[in-house]
Image (cartoon, rainbow, N blue to C red; front, side):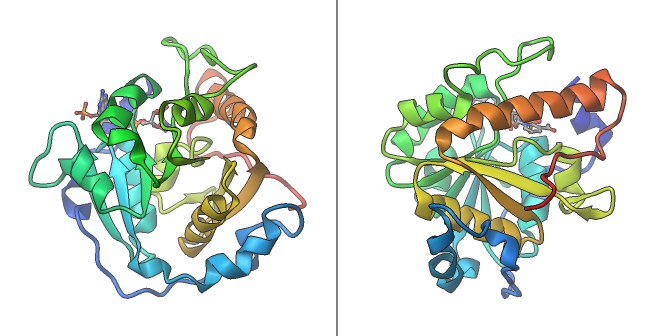
Length: 250
Ligand SMILES: NC(=O)c1ccc[n+]([C@@H]2O[C@H](COP(=O)([O-])OP(=O)(O)OC[C@H]3O[C@@H](n4cnc5c(N)ncnc54)[C@H](OP(=O)(O)O)[C@@H]3O)[C@@H](O)[C@H]2O)c1
């Protein structure tokens, strides 16, 4: 069912996104980080950075990878795909990570350990984890009460700065430039490294989506549960994939 998106969105392979160089027209709306709390002091610092000069590595070339490339096609960043099968449109995982400022993990959760190994532990890198550790039949999460996919990946890669994000959005929403039901989608984020979270939040907002920081990495347990709810609504309840969770009042 999950892989069905690929056939539902033909012609969106990695090729046209291998490297996207554009002059930045980046902007950072005020919603980049919610007003108070441990992340609020990082907004100005994050905004001062020259985001358009950052290179984004997307590990994986599937549905979410294509969606991310679409979303970031407006931010002026260079985007490189990393794959276990390098081609004329994707370099090796190690090469992609080596040139990246921010890495996006767009592979199945079960593949995360392989990717961490191929990336030599993502030492010093910001790694955005998109994975949802769903059971094989998508009836619910395989883990969740006492840990999360993001926390497990952080354990596998202790020198990486892991940020949970984008997992609550369907790939088709990202492929639609982050628009859901005609409005910018919300990207819920969680992470222990506040600077890393701030950078990802600023990038999200620069792409025209809305970042909401949910808290430390342990909050990924909730974000993964929200994603399971989203999948249940989209498929189990037949609401389709032009839906996405957000939070009113933030
Ligand atoms: N699709 C959605 O709407 C959605 C929404 C939210 C979150 N997510 C999460 O996002 C992640 C990617 O989902 P997707 O729909 O984009 O999946 P997908 O279309 O099946 O793409 C998965 C990608 O992962 C690569 N991969 C698989 N096993 C690998 C391994 N052992 N080492 C390296 N690369 C490997 C695949 O490479 P090959 O092409 O070589 O097989 C492929 O490029 C999943 O964790 C999923 O839970 C998906």
